[in-house]
Image 1 (cartoon, rainbow, N blue to C red):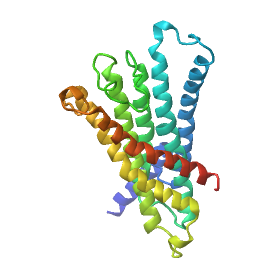
Image 2 (image 1 turned 60 degrees about the vertical axis):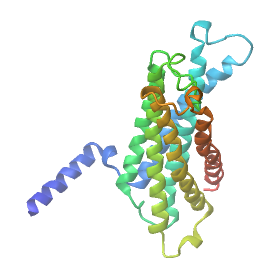
Image 3 (image 1 turned 90 degrees about the vertical axis):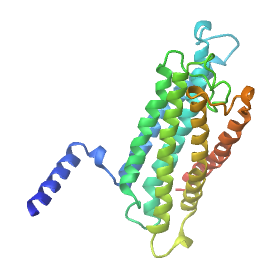
Image 4 (image 1 turned 30 degrees about the vertical axis):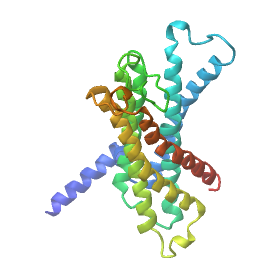
Length: 274
């Protein structure tokens, strides 16, 4: 029995030495990984923003020719989604939050360390799925809001690219929900004996940000799933010709979109006070 325990301990230590990134659960290490991942994908979003600016510098096509004019819409779509879901939320929320929240509340670790690791590794997975839409045959120039009927049309755009985007957003949404639950549990159960009355402003910003994400991200995910159902299962949630309503998606999207503005504002302002 003792030898089995020693064998398991030695095996785990060897795994940690050989592939430490995979088994790391430390909140500081994961916070640094969040920041590095966010910076990498922010470079992608910045390059696409430069394409947009160069194209709009003067009238006429400068970089994107008439044969690839749909590429401009694809660039706008990926730029918006990359900067929000692949840079802002992983880096400013997941990165700084994981690094500083346990320290500022007087705890040693987040309440669910392994869930914290899972939520990080979902970020590069979702980001790769989302950027995979660029590699599809026609790309997906839906705009970052993905409004129907453009996103539900089988004649205008390639539905495969839409599937990649929705799949990537769903994975990134699950990652943010897991991180939010982790932050809330950490602030409630892992704080020092002084209690919440001594929390600094940054901790309260993380708490309210986590609450907003927990309540709004499932609504956005539901709206995206309804787009998938309209594309592949012949439902008519957003088709006005069959008693659907395309404005319904706008309500579902901006139920997330408006709190997202305050999420970005909280994170930007309070990160500056760290």
